[in-house]
Length: 432
Image 1 (cartoon, rainbow, N blue to C red):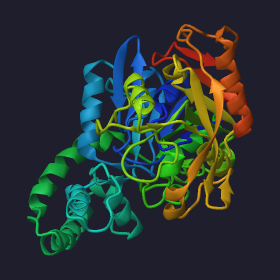
Image 2: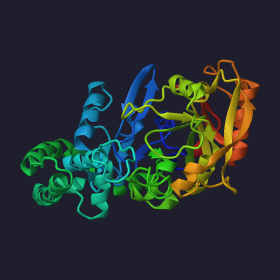
Image 3: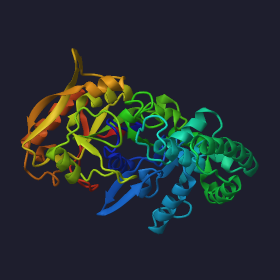
Image 4: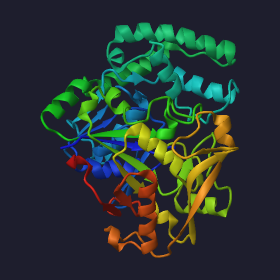
């Protein structure tokens, strides 16, 4: 019996929420292992849409254990708002097996202020941050001055760290950015309230998770952003502030890598990107606009329009290598219905160089890359009702088969619509 990691293979927004929701039905424990509320997972169950930013998508299934791991940075206000919204729908009753790692770092008001100030004041090149304080919170973690959930639970420790940090952040806000300072006392009062409400949920998730694994429970590790937003392996500096590849599932949850046997890479049937950064297959024409409108490509967290383009298999092969992907979940295949011809990028060219297996690390080189396309015939038949591969049109099946050849990985799942039921499952990742 395998434990499974779900990661994105592109720049995020691949449809991980739906896939995690589907796999959560067969898991006992669902763990979020990185990122913050800059990620949004959209799920549609029986026609009702749910958007989750911090709580693992498995919470929609009764009887599951859901954990926010130590690798996540947590905004308490956002978490509590999300909990209240779910509780109001009867999804998160008192006594639910939901917990937050005592080692997870806390997003503070000064993190959000610094995040926005850097972007708006033009200090450095804009990277398209969401302004939610994610990056500055990770900075404090690496600088060893961050505030963890266990610190928030200890008022004396919290007060000491808060006063020291506010003094430093106020210097930056006032002297560098010319903005108003923050009031440490006001923050203390606000966060004291958060601490009391969250106290019943704070736990040693690493220990609890290891006990669940030892008991033979099936664990699903839920990734947030896509591979190419990884701080090390993505298109730096236009990336997020954490490691998004599958290896971080171990670090961000507190279990050894031997506990993970299967990695599912989520791949949208085309490519999208939010914010700044090079995008070789971007379409700034009617086709790109069509993908955006039909695919409803607007950020679940920010509402920003997503840039759209043809499927980029250089990105996907890069993701397969860096995450050790064992199966692909292809999403939003139905959005391509009606296109006469579908293009797939199989390589990049920059001058005399050709790139097929890896995305250039230098953003200047990546910005000069032109895609090498392969053209495949499209289809016009409706595919949302298909529940087996054999029920898909021949051109759709040929498209899927070609993607398997180009990626070197078999499809584990094909999504043909937004609803939970609009899915073709071709393999069980928990089978090991």
